[in-house]
Image (cartoon, rainbow, N blue to C red; front, top):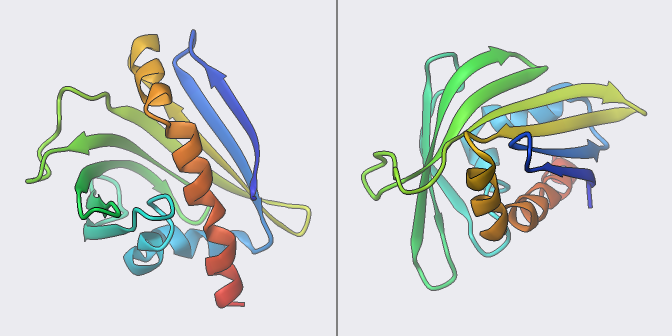
Length: 163
């Protein structure tokens, strides 16, 4: 599994996951820049993602849904804030209704994904900051760490297919 470290800091509303990939920074960037590649790794196994909109540019929006084993769909969106290709991007990540309007009953997090060369590959740091400790605890209770770890774990296989 590529995830090497997880920090859950509820008091500071922060969740940080660190991963290592045996691929250059530019190749890992392509996973997020190409919606068809991102679909293969965004949802955890058994919950493939479909990106309806994909605009990885400041002010851009990405909308997607994950389809569960029983056909249930879980919608979400990213509002892209900042892009420093191929090193990082930040976005607001929220849960959505079927029409991709924000589901205000669930929290929105500010995320920063950073990629740097490390030990012949890439270190990825996935940082999420929530509006409150309660909001972070809510997504932790929903299995955010387990789901993200499983989803990130799929990236190695995708990278191996293209090497």
